[in-house]
Length: 293
Image (cartoon, rainbow, N blue to C red; front, side, top):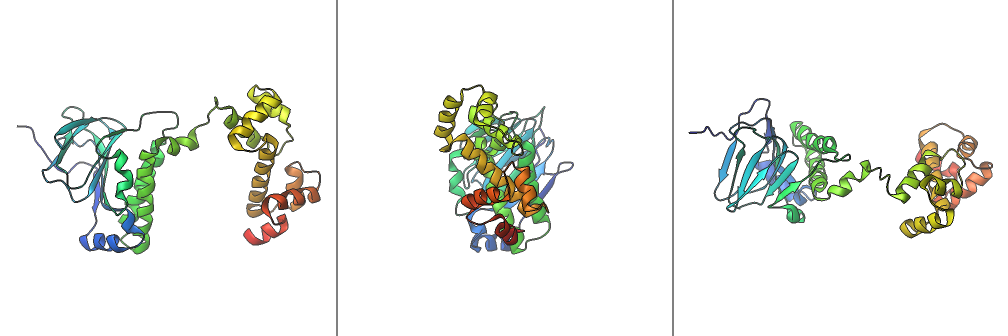
């Protein structure tokens, strides 16, 4: 007969929140929306097996980092492999376990909350977070660690509230996969995105509409129309907005003089810079620095 164990794996880690803390989370205005009740990581979980004929009192999120495993939910079997996840709804019959020959390593979270239903579209089915150049697996696991390590530090209201926000982000990273990965999408084939990257790389140079259009392989008129259609701005207006955004950063986080910032960003003189800045920000560079530095 094959050995079956629920837990007890080398290098495993787990936190089960006390009942009185869960009661507090259910009442707190922040945490009651979505909160962790159990959290853990099982590496190479050989012989791992759980069965709950009446289900669990919480939703159970399982993310397979490596290896393979399976989940039976309401009589239907699902096989999980690397970078796949599954959310088991609360109070529904299920069992799950590691593959015999290639046992899974899993991140798992039990959660509850008044807004748990916002993830219903990814509940009860395999969620495939397939590999890509913009996968951001490390960022997602860092979110898991944010939750785990804060809970390890105790159950202060601030810790509990912070981990609720992290949990929302963690689950959203799976539900809104393309949005989560957007930050890593260079989108070289996307003309507008490619042109914006070029603008950002040349904020301290003077580039023209012709040069931007040439960079993406279009005529200035065709590129201008395409850019305006997607962003509602002309390319040069957008470029100038990015310059002001960079100027704000210099004003807030550097000791550069205003005239130095003006010349660095290609303005004719400090007066021209101040005029452009105020048009965009409704205050002068000097006022901005005084208010936010």
